[in-house]
Image (cartoon, rainbow, N blue to C red; front, side, top):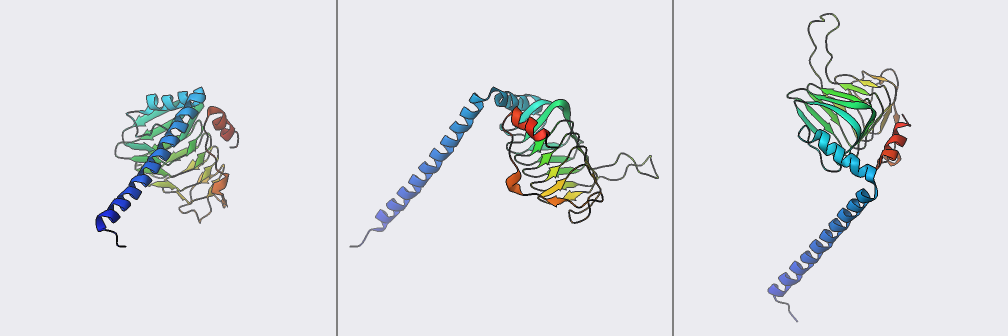
Length: 227
């Protein structure tokens, strides 16, 4: 028995329609779970609202960005936050300075602890699932040269790849590029590539499975005690 082409088209369109309904149902279920999670955790709800109030209009950020405490913002350039970024400025504020024409991007589910300062004259790019300890200093331009102190050297982009742990009081200087799954604690960043020694110390690889996302202020404080 032969099947008409119109019947075949009807069957195929029906299958596509069923797949679309299933995907829509899955997305709806995920949205409901996220809403319920926020409603059950007043601290998380406050952090989500705090991020929007403090940074809306100064940076591009999704509704899932969380800010516990304070942040000092000077945005003349383009600043973008990824999904689920967690900022903890509850002891001292986080500082972000983006000079006109510069670009700062912070990837999905990256955690930034209190006292961290990020300054961009050209570009600072922090990718996904990174952990930045307290009082980390990242700047892509030195304020003055060594010999000619009245002349500032040019800016050089900074790139921190996925799954990188930057420990407390680390200083990352212009032109530094840090490779994925690196562990850098208490060092001065003067290496140009992740394969070089980083401030005289070779980093240990990190496993992405060891990275966890903070979903509440308690989780964020737990992260901060590990630096």
